[in-house]
Length: 271
Image (tube, rainbow, N blue to C red; front, side, top):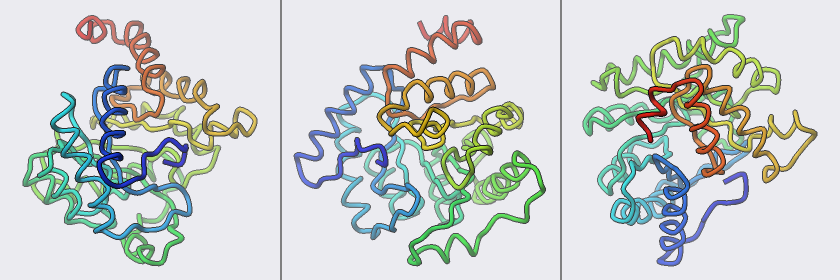
């Protein structure tokens, strides 16, 4: 993880640490666990597919036996997605929105698994896969941030539907932290309701991202909790359905309070 709290190891010790962290996250209020074997921070290098499999599959297999919440696999490779589902994962989280490996859509459809597709405007530095995602570039800008995001997401959603994945299993992610400027991030949060009005469940992932640190005076990742929580509450107010975060307990409490004010029926149902 870019924020320094990843568990990049192999073997039984790594699995035990991952299970312990997963149990803590669930106790703190996590409704789902997202497992990834490769950092996608700016400037990251592509990890070999066999290495990615070695990192995530044993952990997912262990988590499926130890925790009672859905497990998401953060991958843009169909081979990893298929193996993860076989190991016990329940949903797929593709940060390249089917641009790197369109076959991932068919894997989701065959398994009837929810698929998250993200708007990603990064320019990969690693030539090992830059060509693949650039060949599937989004169309020309419409001159409006939200329209541009919807344009790219619409392409991914059409691929998913063509592969046989029903609309109600498709989730969108506007791509906080992925190739957008500080001003674009703030605009995106301000206008998030224009995306939630589209009708797809929306995943919002601002956790500890650099734009928060910049707004608050160049704070390092470990000091971005308050900004993250503020962004999450604003996203809930604008209709976001899922929050992807590092600081589970604080964000879960903030989200429950926001629900009590903004979505009282949902909050009452939750307890």
